[in-house]
Amino acid sequence: MTMLWPPAEPAVSDRWRLWPAAEIFPAQLPGTTPSGARTTYVLVGIAPESPCAAFQDGARLPGCVTALRATYTESTQTFVATAGIAVLTGPPPAGPSAPPAGRRPDPRPATVRPYPVQGGPAELFGQRQYITGARESGRDRYVVLTAAGYSDGRPYTRGMAATPRLRGVAEQLARALHRRLTG
Picture 1: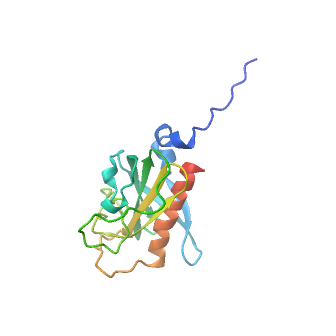
Picture 2: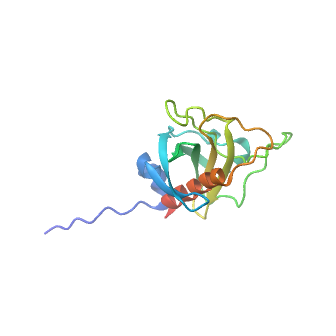
Picture 3: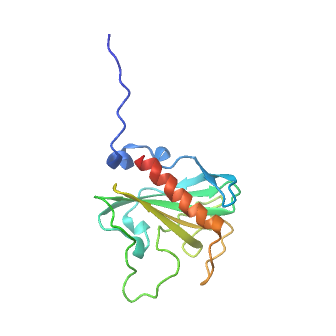
């Protein structure tokens, strides 16, 4: 009698290339609002694998091999966020990179470049529309960066503050995707 064992789970360092995109970026992820109400982050689209230029200049990481990106909206379709996973050759540096020399600092965090998806709530989401972002990393070779904004296409203006709910979208999505890939 031959026993079939379930296939071994791939090593964390290999998941980015062995898991299908739908495993890395699931169709839905649970979240909560600042008031504690439940919300759901819904996948809008997955970008093709791309070079590390998918991250803004101040967010590029040493040893970056590739960028994996997907855009989500939350259940009310008020907010959208692009999540970018930087796959590194080794553990990430402790903090964000310094902005390029000679540039006036942008008060928004350097993060992933937004990935607009035609025909849905993220259609108007671009570089001018992201308002806030988040970063999640550990001792593994992945850093998850998010860029979040409003689905109505309103552009960021200097001094615009992110609402707690918008910050929550960016932070929860980064944390959930990092945990999914490394857990």
